[in-house]
Length: 487
Image (tube, rainbow, N blue to C red; front, side, top):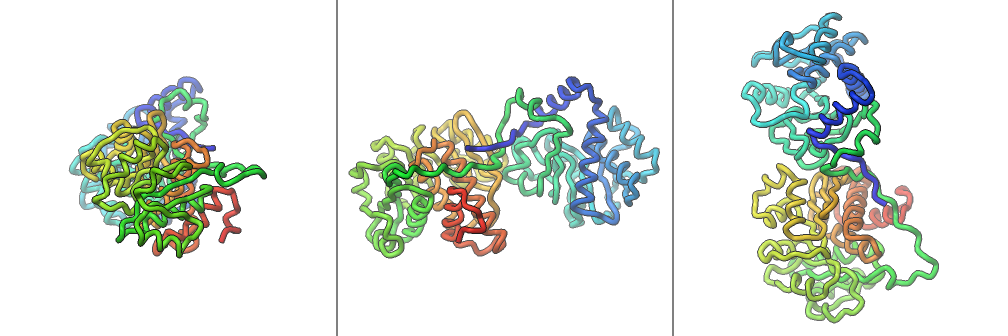
């Protein structure tokens, strides 16, 4: 049902590079030329510059840059190299690439603070996947000059200064396009890394999936989800489960209403909203298909399949976690329930936790910056501490349980509005109620939620989303309906 691509850490990519060369009896320089050719094709496709400056460091990433410059020169493009190391100090494959560029007359100069970038494309071949902070002062100045120039950047393998294992992009040069090789790296796909990497294009260089199989993966990139199968002609409502939403304080009744509506639109057979009288009146007027009850009546609902706890929960309501354990059923926790969990830690393998960065920081007792510096590790730490499945929301949402970790590929900044998380909670709860495992429900829910937002953005842009507009789009994805036919 879930389809993904592997990602490898920087250490494992280096091992893969070595093993691939040995098994296939291919030289490192031949691979460098393959990688450089891919970059040149991207330059032609995405940029078509009048003049290109290639920024080269030492090591093989700099070698890629010299080889790119050589190929551009050979095909008649205007190119020059700005290098931060003496080319005479280069070794191995990087030295061969420099010699090839020098032989055909590629011009170059050593970077200094006075160098101005007069180009309409910069190729970033400075550091590569082996970056370890801190950034040297001279490079910090260069990086800032690149950023201030506002010239589009193509990153070679990864944006320089990015930690490709964690996504920490504090030191990174933002790219419009990143050409990455052999395997995807997790830090390109989540958090700050997703932003600075821009459009990521992966090139396997002939290193096919069978070579990657033996290597341990830090995470997988979720790229598609199969729609749910057709229902039997004898289907009846109780087969699709009963989602009960608990939340909706007087000032935030809308949050719980959105969650209940999302569960309904995502296929739950029955949906009940446990809320106060104001919330009950509102949902009866807005969506009569959804049943209502008072909070204290929840434990008497015999057919309950999945609890959705926390959207719009009053800060003084401390009962949801107790109810969750008493009822001993699957649950999805968001918002107020997560705030409560941070102050009253508990453990269960029956719940799905859906924190955003701030809620994750509270659960771990760290800063939001610490969470964003390594989102994969933060999600795994929350899972070990509190159990179940963790959905760490944000750019490149992380979904993990004790055994697996995925990074979501869908979604965009349009989702950064009130109510977005409430919708996701209802989707995940409904998918569990219909028989998906907690991990499958969380991953599929996150993906379809993001795909709906992507479709909305394509029609409207990234501003002004009213999250109720996502409901019919999510329903279409769950049912496998062609996007153009949903209204």
